[in-house]
Image (tube, rainbow, N blue to C red; front, side, top):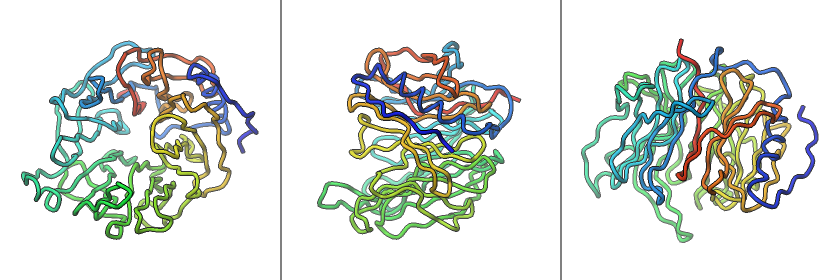
Length: 350
C-alpha cells in the first residue's frame, strides 16, 4: 500500500522537482522486476523540431544526457511520435502522421536504419481516404517482441455541436511484425468514442488503455482508464469518469500499479499524476502541482530502479528528467529550447 502523501502546492514550475520526489517515492511500495531484465539502455523520445510543433522526430539519448541520436528525419509537417522499445532493444516502434492523410505504424533500428512501415499502404486521396484508409497509432510492443498492439481508426469522422469530432470506429488490434497478420481484440460501437494509449502488463496478460466517450455514450465526454485481458475480454473501468483519467498509463515493473496522468481540460498544464491497482483499488493522487506546471508522461526504467519523465524545463518547454525511485538523484537529461516528451526507456541490447 502507498504511504499517505502530504499536500504539496508549489507556486511555480520549478517546484516540480519536489513533486516528482513524492511521485517517485511512492513507487517504492514493492521490489520491482523489469519486463526485460538487465541493464538500462537508451531513452527514446519525441522532439518537435520547430517552435510551432508542426514537425516531430524520434530521438534516443543515454540516461546521462550524452549521445543524442536522431532516428527519424521526417519531412516538414510530418510528426513521428509515441516511440516504444521492443523487449530486446532491437527496434523502436512509433507512429507517423502526415498532413492530409492518416497516421501509420513504423519500426526503425536504434541506429536509425531499416525504417519500415507496418501499416498497410493506402493510396486513396481525400475525400475517399476517410473511408478507405485506416488510421493506425498508439503502438506498443507485446512482451513476446513479435507482436504490437495499437489503435485502428476507420470510417467517417462525425462532428458534434460541442466542436469535438469522433471517428466511426476506434478498435484495438494486435499485429505481428511481418505486418501480414492482425486481429481485432476490441471493437467499438459506431461513433461511441476513442480507445487509445494501450500499454501491456509485464506478464502480457492484461492491457490498460484510455477511453474517451463521444456525446453518444454516457457519460458524454467521459474519460477513464480501463483494463482488459490481452484477448480483449473482461473489459472493466478502473477510474471514475469524474477524474478524466488515463492519459499516458504505464505499468510498474512488478505489474502491481498503473501510473497515469489526469487533466480535466485536455491540455498540458494543471495536470496531476495518479497510481491505481489494475483492479481499480488503491487509487492515490501523488502530485498536487500548480496550474502553471507542465507535467507530462512518465516511464519506468527496465531495471525498475528509476523513471524518466517530462516536465517543464529551464526554458518553459518540457525536457526529460530521470530520478531514482525514492526521488533522489534527479538528472536533467535533455536541455533544448524545443519540446521533448513521450519518453520510453529501453533495455540494453542483448
